[in-house]
Each structure stands twice: as structure tokens, then as C-alpha cells.
Length: 204
Image 1 (cartoon, rainbow, N blue to C red):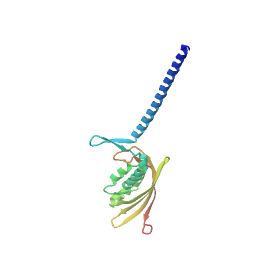
Image 2: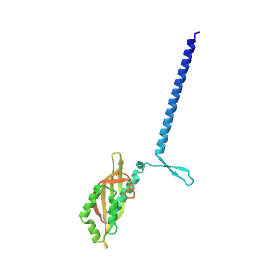
Image 3: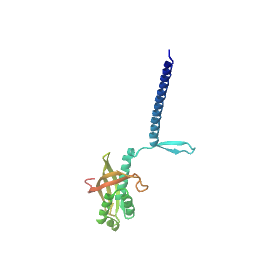
Image 4: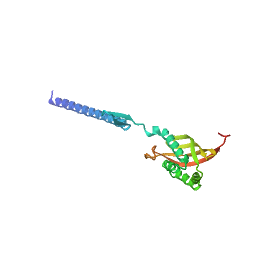
């Protein structure tokens, strides 16, 4: 029996130990990275509030995508009430608020109405234009968000009250929230008034 055999045995043992330590280290590092990634993902979807006793309360954040439909309906309802629910006392304030909710296509419709004397007649005859209902069909997809809204409003001319049904269409663009001017973070684009019909007793 030679001493070389003992040396080879020791070297093989050392090699096995080194490989085992390296393998365990890699496994431990991989598990740690996975745990950190999962924890970080969970943290990004949560926020925290401090309770009155100093304890931290995790609050689940719902992404805007999950709330998109609710916010879009609210945004469009708000816009149509501002843009079409006007009288001589509030029309400037309401139109200013409405213009924050849309892009230049909304502004173009406003300018056209102004050029046609719509707001002058509102002041001249003390008309009251009141929105009765806003019904929206919404299509949300990765390719774009479109809407089709039917707004029913009435114009009070004093002794006469006329009702109208207005159909508008357009797209919705996600933008940064602007408090208090655009709280939903949506912008109406490609806005268009498709049709306006007077509602008579026959077609109510």
C-alpha cells in the first residue's frame, strides 16, 4: 500500500466537499432570489397605512385596469353632465370642467357650438338645459377603448319643455390623473356628435 493512494482519497474527498458546498450555495442563492422576487411583486401590489397604535396595515391596491370599466363609465357620465347640463348661471363653469376631460376634438365641438350661437341663445332666452340620463356602451380592449353614449336632455324654455336624444361616440385614452380637474385619468378623444333627435310623445 503506497501513500499516493491516501493522497488521491483525500483529494477526491476534498473535491466532493467543494462541489457539494458550491451546489448547496447555488441552491440557497436561487431560493433566496425567488423569495425576494415574490416578496417584491407582492409589495408592488400593496401599500401600507399606519394605524392609530403605530402598527402597519397592508392595503391591497387594485390596478387601474381592473377599475377601468367603472372609471370610464363615471368619466363619461361626468363629462356629458358637464357639457350638456348647462344654464345661464353655470355654463362657463361646467364647460370649463368638461374641457378638462377631453382633447381638442371636444374643444372643436365646443367652438362650433359657440360659433353657432348656442350659448348666446342660452343667455338671451334664459334657457335651462338639463341632462336626464346618460347611457353608455363601452368597449375596452388592448387595441383601444371606445364608447357610444346616448344622452337624453331637456331644454326648458319657460312655457315649453322639449326633450332631445343625442348620440355621441369617441375613444378613451389613459392619461395621468389631475386632481381635481381629471380625477379618473382618462381623456376623451375623437369625440363626435352623431345625431340629435327631438323626442315626441310618439317615440318616447
